[in-house]
Length: 280
Image 1: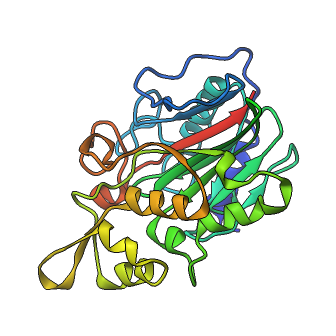
Image 2 (image 1 turned 120 degrees about the vertical axis):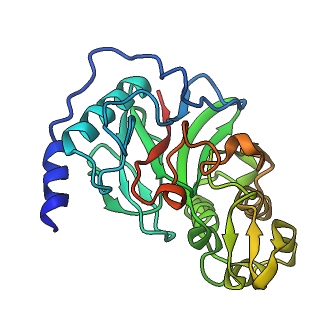
Image 3 (image 1 turned 60 degrees about the vertical axis):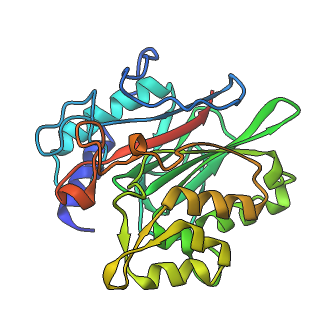
């Protein structure tokens, strides 16, 4: 383990349990979707933390060069707002998922998680990639929640199996069919600015010809890609019927809203916001 990572882990172990729940910062996003009241979900923005520039202020990324002490304080604020422990991941743009329990440590390599346990928050960090929050509802009760980190690589996957398909494969034997899940898409790089090469379009077209709707050709053989639309297509193909949140409009674009969202593509050296969901 790198020395810098070890220091972050040591600081993370010092996070104390909050004494009382707190309201999310007013700038944070609270999903507008019809989940039961036993579900708490939110997506942070740049506001509400203690990190200094260029990570100001609510940076929750542990491996981006920010002060470990600042990250710990910010995680404490997130923990209070959730009234649950956010289980943080080390994301690698893949499809591996974790089933969370009280013994799951932070910063395992994965690009998504799920749990039916109360008081644990499935959490993904983002700074251009798309967060997908998921909630299973049966007979009016929430039984399971999940969170996915969906950059184009993880979303496309290999041979048509990306992070969305991997998630529903993990649920296949549990009696939770995709039609019983609700999905919420958070902020990401928008289709107005997400320029990609032809290999990205080819990766999605290999799965479905419908993906062509999400690519606008540019000069020189490149394309503008609509990541939220691609996610909606993959969710629909998996059987999810209810998808809320990011519709690809400019207000959801991480790159185009520098005062509100971190963006790696825009700034290179920057923080991470997170999307989290838990059962209370």
